[in-house]
Image 1 (tube, one colour):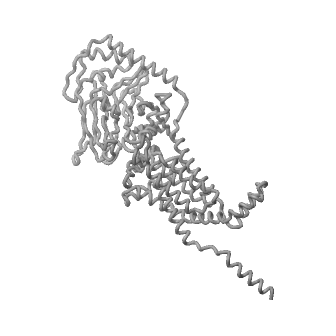
Image 2 (spheres, helix red, strand yellow):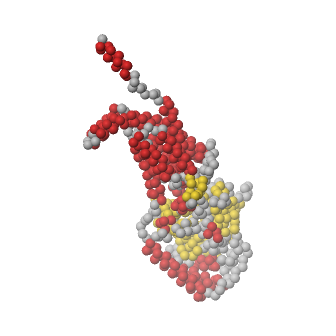
Image 3 (cartoon, one colour):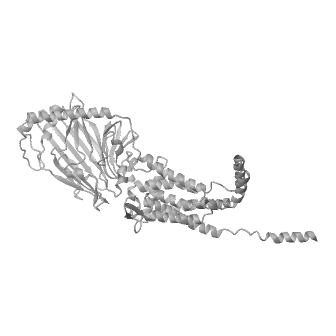
Length: 599
């Protein structure tokens, strides 16, 4: 392999490595740590003061009895406690609701073709979200509600009412449950949770709506009787426990864990590393949506347009999870009603596009200039998969079509390399003759190329033109849900990860990169090469082996197939070339001419 091909491969390696570096670099923003720490300290002090006042002024809470799933009416004891606690936080109307913690918990399961969701009457929260079409590490359905959240008896999509003095978490409030069932299918179409205190005229209603063939869930939140003319009130709604980790390569998955928000047209991504200095990040602007994500799954909240202007993201690098909460203003007229769209499921380009809010931008398909190519590659793979139900075969087909598409350039490149090989003796003579005149040497060499119609860059051009496809395929294999655990043959059971056949002393053995390096060595043995560059011919397969060793097996499969097709092309082209005329026949002509001259 000559220096130009080496340069092209080095550029390819640099392109992919730069892609990884720039994508995974933490998005550091303007430091707001000091102000946020002061705010959190102030809120914590207010909460501690209110709890201390409650403990000092209230005897032990009277026992509460109620029928299943019906919150009990406030007892005399709780009525005495409520004003103290809620007055300290500036939200007197919510005290009785918080006190209703003793009612029995009712769990409701909503099942569709895509998922099985479990809701709890305590807080009206989602406690389990199992995706039927995706398996976790233990071959069970992926559950997007993290195990620590479930173990703690908590859930997602709870409400927290916030004032200037502090917060009241409504996740322990007992809600009554009602549902609406489809008469034909028996599926729950709507599920409502209601908590009310007639004494204060306070009511909170959360209504979820479900569709049979979509991961999108509707959520209507209605709050009555907690408005305040004296201070600003809002409530927080979000996903606070993070999304479950579901992949064997957890290091790669944790890299993708983030809180992601779209404010106006700017997408803000808070990776786990960014939370090391700032555990909480507040972003203000026109919130189009906000979400938490892992490598393949996402929980996203889409508020009505122009309603939400603040989002609070948080994360824990130690526990490998992030969270997001939207701040929704509470109306001063006493009634706040807001409709959201939730998406809890795979990061699927086509499903996210249907929401028409830009959530498809969370599908990492590379830099902005490579995304169109990545989408074309993904569309091609998905379309061909309907005919060939094996993504490995489809990747080989993609390699074949790429080879056919660039065949004229590759053929011209091989011809150019052979012609340059023939010119090496003349070029070497020029180097020896003009070694002290580099400018003249370059001019003479270029003149030689022009005279013999040789393009010195011909060997690089086909490889460089394939780079967008290569980088796009890398993005697709790394981040597309379609490639997750896509089986090919034998030991290659996940095209999105390296093909590990064994682990020896902690070192993973990947077989496919070894086969790729062998095919590359074979290819170079058939390529015309300057004898002085023979050492490079043996060294390049080793370099590429190191570079490809940790990449997804689907990408290594693509490159290996490309190498084998190039070998076949070289063999066919070499057989089709006419042998060069030998120099010996020239001698008889000279002898004949000499005889005639003597006559």
